[in-house]
Length: 307
Image (cartoon, rainbow, N blue to C red; front, top):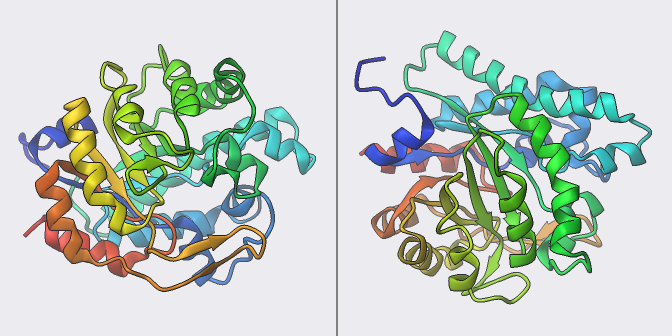
């Protein structure tokens, strides 16, 4: 690394575009792991941690600069349903960050020379319910109740010293407000990304209103969208950049649709690396993929971003 190498992820966003990884679940499933229970990929934190390291490593080798941890569906409440006590649940949350760090170490040992960062995934309340409600929002909880749900997990993840907290797949403004309150004072920067449909959140609020919540949040270094259709990204990038003045983060899914009842994906992929140029021109500075976007697509994004 040279003297010009950015020391933090926030520094990197001022000098260029950073490549995120792709979907964790599709990497694990392609390696033969069954993710059909309510804990999804978080189950492997306890049962097959090495598989998570390998999944992260595959994305680093494909060209990703940032690994998003396997903690999206890891919550104290979700682990409790499986009989995992609170102390052990906290250990697994910390482990999710450590596994991503281990993958970065291995990537560097194998010859990757660029800086590599870790984003600790903080999924929405609906992810814990495992019924698809993260794509609807409006759980019937107040902002204060949602803040009480998120804060303990955020405190544990922040103490594990990730480079950034990924407040992701947020379906509505109530949960965004709760998360923005919960990250205050933790000492770790965050990005906030909504799950959207067209020009609105999944709960139906205008994106201008949703993005504006983070405009003055000092903790938030990027705002954007994830786990949406690739076709919904262009408008969201423009709106997020205009409303907040912050770097934009985008990592859509493949374009396929999730059937919560069948617990399966349907439809066809519409994600292409060629779309990246337009997103970058509009202000996107963190670009990757979410569900069903694999290392091949991330390699295409890295090639596009790095010329």
